[in-house]
Every structure is written in C-alpha cells, then in structure tokens.
Image 1: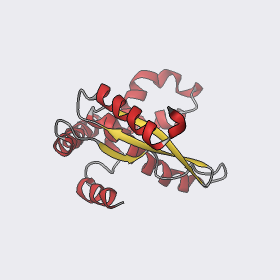
Image 2: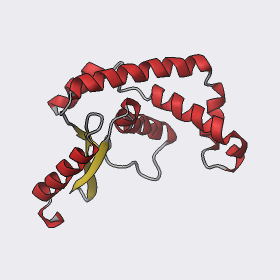
Image 3: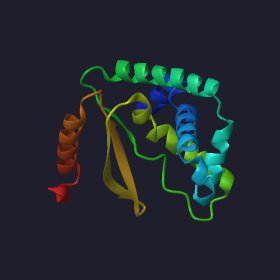
Image 4: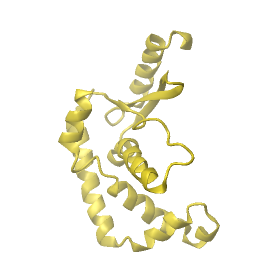
Length: 164
C-alpha cells in the first residue's frame, strides 16, 4: 500500500483528520435537531455540538477549502483515487468504547474525504477476506459522477466475474 502511505504523509495534516467533518456535522445536527436531541440515539453527539462555536466552524471551513484544493490538485481533470472503503473489519460488538472511538476516527478519515472536498465517490464491494467484506472506494474530480459509474461497472465485471 505505498500509495496510502504517500497519501497519509502528503495529506495527514489536512485530510486524515475528522475535525472538519466533525465540526460541520455536529454544528449542522445541533442547528437542525437540538429540540429533538432527547429522542435521538445520537443525543450525546448532538449535545457535544453545543460546544462548537463559529470560530471553529470558520477554521473547519478553511481546512475544508485546503482539502478540496489538495484533492483537485491530486486528481486533475481525469484522475481517480482508489482507497479502502473502511480501515478494516467492523469492530466486534463487545469492543471497548475507547477502541471504537479510534476505529471511528480512522473510518471517518477515509469516508469524509470526498464529502469534504465536494467530490463524487463510489464504493465497490469487491471481495471477502476471512469471511468479511472488503470494499474499494473510488473518488473522482468534480462532474465525474457518470465516468465513475462506468469505471465501477468495468471494474466489477473484471474483478467479480459473477457480477456480469
């Protein structure tokens, strides 16, 4: 996985950090659903968003702009970034909360890149390892939605012959 090492090293300070995602998501949740938070399974998540202030949202917005610029530079007009859908197998039901937080942070660092950069992404269920599903995410430049779907169809046909 040399590319992932390169990607992590190149973008660690701006992409492999869920803060912009967490700030936007929490702030938006609080703004929209604070009156319902006592009924939500996400009540602790929503209540934490009370502590996110405008300065943090502005900082997250600036970081989001840097992420988008990095991704646009990396992808150009016709590139595709391939990355794992998840950092590994889903955690077990009895995983300690602290370990779940670490796993969730790693997951968000993969799943929030396209959304933060405003780019299309598809995820392909490609294989199974030790009986568990393994997926591949493809991120493309702005406006490449249909091209990504075409690539997805071709990859699925090549890599999973039963898909045809």
